[in-house]
Image (cartoon, rainbow, N blue to C red):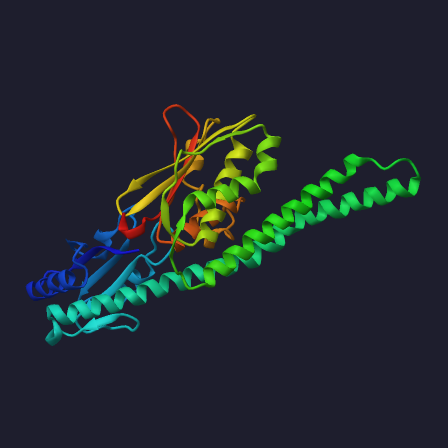
Length: 346
């Protein structure tokens, strides 16, 4: 994520001049905005990108409030720089003699780097909590089904009549659910702890591998999957991107109704490429759309979504510097999209 906005909370002309010059030197593409105080900087739904808040002679309470403010993903919202004597610790500080554009730029860059670490630490703590709570909970149901079905089989064999093949289906299905859950959690755990390195790869090969893996499910549901005539190259992690496609196509197969019609597509979008999976099903109710891509690190909360697929998609997309979302086409159905960097910046 890049720095998109610098908020300057104060009135002193020297503070404003130094902060503006520091912003120009450190983050020339970012927007600079003057506000009365940190409260005035709040927006109900902040846009994507990092934000920095420069405070002129704040109190300890103001600093604490700024550091504890969260964004829409429930992660620390602002990198904070104090101009003046800081009454607290943990923030970049410029005393009045150092109110200079070059020194402000250095403080801004340092605060932004610390802010990224704070966000990742908060995300990882949430991930660990989700793993600790959700894995035992989600394993319990398929394991219970396996045990119950196995006991029924044991009783059936003991009584002597021919084995009922239908009793095997819950075991097979529950075993498949376990394998899927373990694979999802394993991939996300390794991805979250890995050093993100992007490589150039052919998206067509990745999608083809996904469709091969889902072939039996596609045939079983009598689905029609229509890809574009050609695919572009992309920058990112092929294994993570394959998991993204698998979750999105699997989601369409399960929720787009009988004999689903699914279309795959892409288009350039600035320095990134946008990819999507569109179906002709019944769509998603408006009240459920905002929680579709709930952050993985919040899935341990009481009101969290039960499904793991879309939160995992969001995490893997964000790790590659992209974004994802849902749209409701005018013709009906659902469209789930994600972006990844285009080779050579598009």
